[in-house]
Image 1 (cartoon, rainbow, N blue to C red):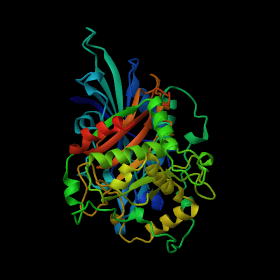
Image 2 (cartoon, rainbow, N blue to C red; image 1 turned 30 degrees about the horizontal axis):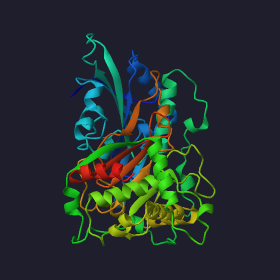
Image 3 (cartoon, rainbow, N blue to C red; image 1 turned 60 degrees about the vertical axis):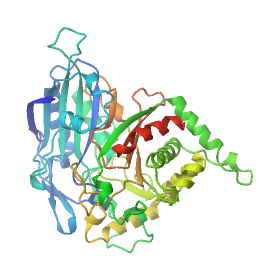
Image 4 (tube, rainbow, N blue to C red; image 1 turned 90 degrees about the vertical axis):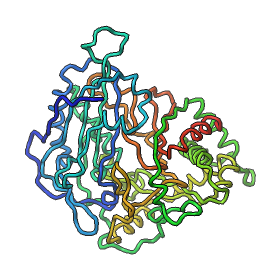
Length: 464
């Protein structure tokens, strides 16, 4: 249990533009509720931490002033961003638990309720802060008799996904951390590029050039006519760690097993870590779900499009610069009985779809929809509405956070020892994250139906 000891509404410490900020299609299709992440710190030298964080937050919000604004509804399920300076929420809390009591910090309702700032969705959307942060100090471990001291802390972050993607959010956190430890912002990535109209290059809308199955209903579980029952099933999250040796073993096995094609296999580009680990997750999940042999299954992949568009977006673009693609369909038996390279190749084919032409067609596809709720991931943490897309059983969405600078969030008491999702997300969502050890090891946070958890863990390590 955690007790909130202080709560502040933090506003920019200088006047900021009071404007309505245009949102791109990539912003509009994002979930309008909050995505939560958690940072865990082992250091204990955090005196006056909240005061320093509050002061630096008010300064960084001058540059990132859209975060202090509010959303409002428009027709067709669209939203507008009003940069009105209403502020963000900063909370201080104390936990009655030690850091060890939370184990591996796998997302759960208990962890979310205790370490992630609460969002009151009973309020009108115009009143919801777009950013909430909670600093929670852990109780001192029982091995030390000085119970007045705390050992370690958590920073829980709840970010409205309409505002920006994960990379932009991480860069904001890192810039805030740098200011908090008394340093000067000296990198272009730390100053946001806020003009999102740079994404509006094909107005008026034109007809999409592709069919975009990634934005349409995915294969259903055989014997069902909708996803309602699958959505109702209890979900859980599991944290699985891969050493650098295990990662390399999977990569070697996948590339060595690649089918020969006229003797040119050795000249082909090796499968990447993401392609290999995503294929491994896909196959293990299909086995754990005990799907029928002829069950169609696909994986949704997402990619940062800053460098995929022509011309590219600025590196410091602050917004959602993401596009999604779908692997070719395959049957469960096909996926399980073929080498790991079979799934890796399908993952690669999805990634390679995401060029400038395909991405702009996807934006046109979204723009042409009068009702965005039909394609938006609009679920709240308490469950998905019936009209929201469902990407779970028998399918997956696998996200790579491997290239994100998540361990640069040093607020003055050292780098985080752990970073990961702060809530249980819908069935079929998986994240691949670099370990804080920075030695090539990885962390996989997989969100599945509870009945599939143990088998998934079993196959995940047995099949390496």
